[in-house]
Image (cartoon, rainbow over all chains, first blue to last red):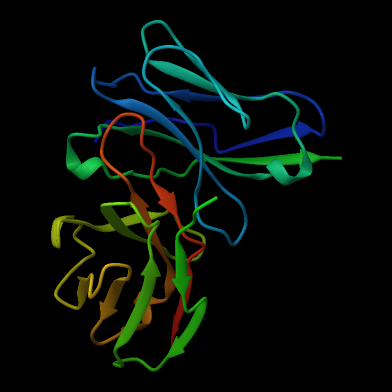
Length: 112
Length: 115
């Protein structure tokens, strides 16, 4: 399984932007970069995904390096409800049954 | 917004008893998954299911586990003889396809406590 490396934890202040980094130097050409988050006592929640180009949605933005060996999830204005564990996952939709393999993720805390 | 629903939300069972965890995936989805998360640990893949058969399973998914789609809406995980180490949160998930634009949606989980 292609692996990702994320910091164990990060802190942010409320209403400030947050940049969550992820390294994936062994990414293959068919791997999509997915981000999920897990709030306390809840199931994982889809945040965003991309292949090569930067992506934006209502929750976040995803910036992908040109060589695709790293990416950054950007929360434009952190709220207290964004405190969660964020997972960066490489997913090949046509291998391994398209399953997600979770790592330890980055635990984001948001201070008021 | 459509969602994956799971029942029960919490179940306590005696060691050695059989447990069935139920899931209703999103209605037009075709790919189904079970994951588990032991308290304080990472989310682990158990099994994927497509076209009425298991497409992949992990080492955790041994003979004590089985999955079934008994009708057009439910997807169940059965643990035949529970062990203490089966205590965990079990998440059901579904996806409409494996294509690039499709994501996997998770339920809120069923918390299983084996005593």
